[in-house]
Length: 243
Picture (cartoon, rainbow, N blue to C red):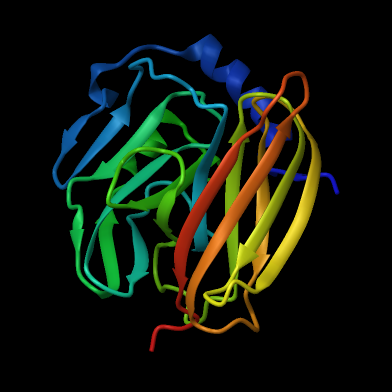
């Protein structure tokens, strides 16, 4: 099947043009420490990977607007170091936010409230923000990840669906995505075709009837124009409610 390209793609063309025409470098928005977080526009060049999981969320409040303090919630089965990164899905302003805290306890954790004034002042759309928590490392690639819940008022009482947003920086002919439970039983298996270079796309995982526990996401891709393809392995813990 064809992937679901992330819904912001059609409308962001106009935002990109507007930003290019009106862009004015302002030191007030430079990436730096702001209280309990590092935040701002980070133009430092980094090597772009061939394939990246840029967002992994369990809930996003639909009525969020700029200028509202927000929070990030996540669950850990035991204490761990979690490196949270908020960035753009489509790289327009190169916005990033990283909480300074990395040591988190077992159970439910909350980062915030986190002011979104900078996001509003720069003119970023909340729909173009991706967020992910990586356990034990800041490095992208395979590893243990935590799904984040992003909200302004109340977190979700129940979690039954996950959203993964990926960005392919090479054209991909096919991408096989599987999810295995702790008994290595397949709970999800789909193949996506014709993923364009630089095009973010979303994978939705339905967990409504799945039990609490550890799960593994396997990604196996084939490039369109060269040999090989991206291969990733992610593990995460599914906590279906806040009890």
